[in-house]
Amino acid sequence: MFKLLQEIARKGDVTAEYPFAPFPVSRNFRGKPEYAPTNCIACAACTIACPANALTMTTDPVAGSRTWMLNIGRCVFCARCEEVCPTGAIALSNRFELAVRSKADLMMTAEFTLTNCRFCRTPFAPTKEVNYVIARLVRQRLPQEEAERRRELYETCPECRRHANVMSRCRTLPAQEAQAA
Amino acid sequence: MMKSTDTHAGTNTVPAPGAISESEQISTLKQTLLKRIRRSAFVFRVDCGGCNGCEIEIFAAITPIFDAERFGIKLVASPRHADVLLYTGAMTRAMRLPGIRAYNAAPDPKIVISYGACGCTGGIFHDLYCVWGGTESIVPVDVYIPGCPPTPAATIYGFAMALGLLDQKLKAHHHTQGTDEEATLTHPHIPLQLRVALEREARRMSGYRQGRILANRFMALLALEDAAPFPERLQRHLDSEGDPRLSEVFGRLNKIVLRRPQW
Image (tube, rainbow over the protein chains, first blue to last red):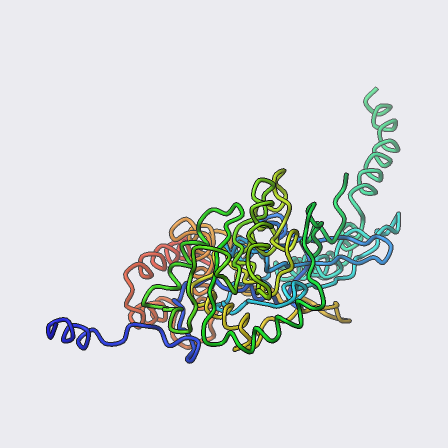
């Protein structure tokens, strides 16, 4: 009996103080995904990577907006979003106190504007994404005027680009054939 | 049929056949329960089709390290003894009726906690053919504890919140794109090809998440405005860290940098 009490005294108190004191999590703990919407370019890489579909994106073609949604209730904290994010806008933090009374509090949303296609005027790509690509190219020593020229290309939807390609080919092809003959 | 936006994002669940909703009288009773329950809450656990990860964490929460029993939280073997019903796992078709039976067997007023990602929304199984969704598709839920699985500390926090001892910390957040809002370029001073090569090697060495973190740390060190030349700076950093794994990864990344003479 005395030995047992001695052993207990030697071991001390192992119980964590939490919730009366903050609980220190390990350095590699994967907690709540912290999202910095100002840094997000709405490229949807995270929504494709997310295995649980906690991250989703919907496009509203009438309003010309794209909404990014994170449902923390569905998140499995795998950090795949953090891996694929090109701008580092989402990263897992060490916050674990996520319990809520209302399910609506589990939703994080962000709304982004879309660029209209120069030809058909349908909204198709987030403005921030197009600007990010051009800024990236300028940083890669692409001349500013060349970058602005390319803006037209990037602000054309894939459908219209394909159409324009076919049309220009139609115009040049007869001339080429005549030359060949 | 296309799912509606709400269901797609998991904000709205379709109630399963026979779903129970809470009456006014019971919600007032629940308030009196919360006043009286503080000393001791008996918990009955209903697994509606989970992977048992949540159960393991619940039992971790009552071990001496976390010791939920010091707050009077005790697991019981029958819903008839329970004040709190803890639903874990996605609500599957087969467990729908046992789930409802457990709810009906528990004496009123009772608190229902939805535990884990699957309990909250159906989680990773939300679009399976046999899954009705989260717990709220059959019974009214008071507190949601997300996590896959929630850690014992998160479990204790959730219980404390359900018993009205702690406040909710997480709030819904909405951001609308402001005018002139632009994303900042990551590591703008490092050529793209070099960046890709560094990130690839770092991920190959230490996994997708750690690899990215280490590559970012290395590139921040590389682009740092400092009087000392880079190899010296790197050595100083590695000496201060004293981690052989980090030295190995950073050493390999440095070799990639050296292969490109412009850096």
